[in-house]
Image (cartoon, rainbow, N blue to C red; front, side):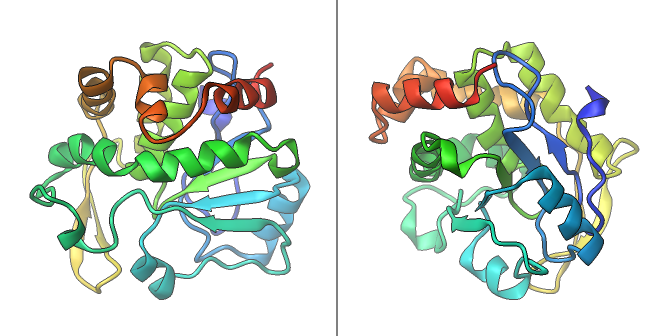
Length: 231
């Protein structure tokens, strides 16, 4: 699956999310943000025919680290996975990475629903989904989409874990400076992380489609999504 990686100068962890389940290659990509995208990288994105970018980051991240375009004409949609304000949720904000993966499914529903509706339009393809480094928020989002296209839990997990390789986390945590200017550690993802997110969805809703139905996604929209993204 490491052949999914594509070298886009200035963009971290860029890869094709297809090739598992019925999700075909060349229609759905995933990555880190474009805030350091180079002109060479932009040309490579143009060669891919990219039409839509879904940005899962917070409004504050967008302000601090805006995506670079270098003349690219794709549409960008801001669909934050997490609430902009911590006061908007009635449970404690996650304190660590493990807590994040049971927190995200509670808040990601509106973002996922809006993304799925965009993917029902063939003119939106190819689509790229990104957050800051394409690991956690992107990881959950892509896992949900891959599940809808019939990918097994094992294949979803294997693809999810590629972020460790794509971000140089395969040897352990790496220091970085976050959007507030604070030094933090970026930590590797594990199979248990994505399992806890999917497990939360199944525990509370039974299935991934039922979870999305609870956020207003119709069966007709899921059918259109599958028709557009399937091999």
